[in-house]
Amino acid sequence: MSDISSELSSLVKTFRLTNTNIIHKTPEWILIAVVLLSVLTMKISLLQESLQKLTSELFISTLLKEFHIQSEDLSNLKNIFKCHNN
Image (cartoon, rainbow, N blue to C red; front, side, top):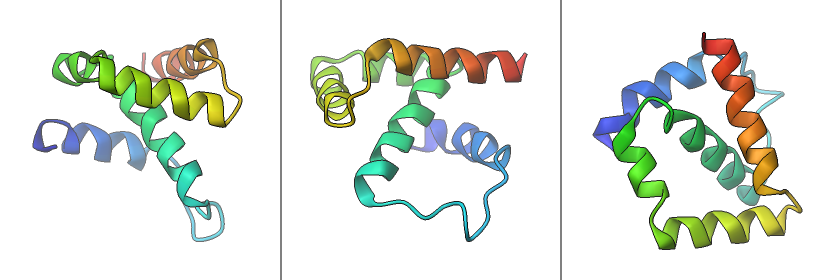
């Protein structure tokens, strides 16, 4: 966690979060966390390795299915963040 906390904090600070736009249910926050962690894999190779482990891939796959999201959608979100950070 200490390896990614500063990068995660920096990423979250780029959002314009207020008390009215951060209201989500727990499953939605889990999905948001997966998206943010996926974005950070572009900067943190150790995190990328962790998310490529079978247990992580199964968890993410199951979560995406629950929300009716394709893995390509997750890749597209990563690309959007990548474009904004260049």
